[in-house]
Length: 162
Image (cartoon, rainbow, N blue to C red; front, side):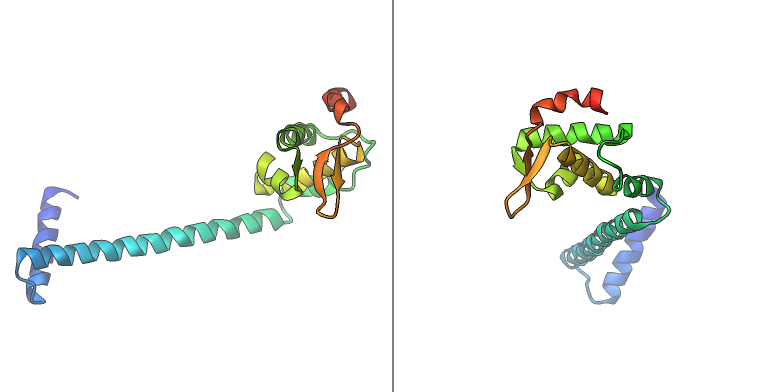
């Protein structure tokens, strides 16, 4: 806003205030502060709507049948645990092992949130399943927490296995 626009805005606002019975500097400043609060409230509403919008976009991305990663990950869910896996899943396996090593016991949701973004949940689940089938990690108890499995010591040999 250049100075002419700013001066015109000020003159228009003062005229609006005077016409509504606010003719002291204090009243005009209070009216300006009220406008500021109203604008901030509207901005906060818009920011909340953006957060909600992003959540809906993530739902669409995650569920969209046109996503190539989603197709790849869904296909990988059916992969034979003795078959070679993609470099992408291999990388996720390494991340999961590091996460489990750090946390000792954790749930699948924490792993999904900790090693990848929401769009990669299918692939992370595939990696968890593969690691479990290999005995590198295991699920225990009724809460199904994930922890180091019987073959945990062999996790460093993932480069050779994969």
